[in-house]
Length: 212
Image 1: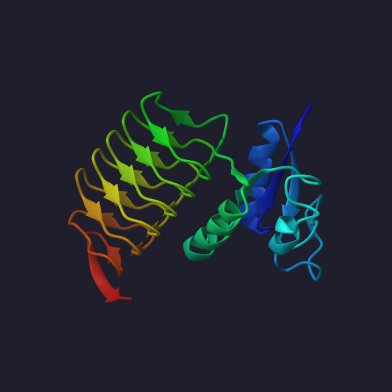
Image 2: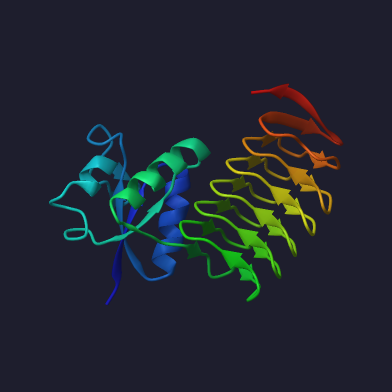
């Protein structure tokens, strides 16, 4: 018997998470705040908004208690996860069958690990993170809550990435580097120096180009 999984967020990112969930044996039920103007995502039906999901007549009964947030924006993903936790939903961690996860790695609830990703020994990944397609998180790395590690990123051993940061597609980060919270690392960058909080860094080697 399959188990229902509510997915909050029906975008391209949601499509991939829906696919992962189905491969893991879940029956997918989508919710998106664009409903009712948006009622479908590919072959899946959107059943309502996030507010509909947590409404008393739905929560923990009609759709079940298990949920994952499929929103790429770190700030909005955090907001939705905290809201769902307040309403006692069970945040599911999804790991694609082709991902390689060390038994010594720790992955917190609400995180999704995409196809081909590698998370090595004693790495720690926080709540509500995205470890995207073919990303490599090497040994002893720490990825804080609500952070997005984009496709084909390579984090060498001992790298630390702060809360709600975004490491852009194809970037590389040297071993033992710290990237602060609320940071953006531009696509294809090579990070060889520590990066403070609340900045955008870009280039090879990456340099801070603005604060925010």
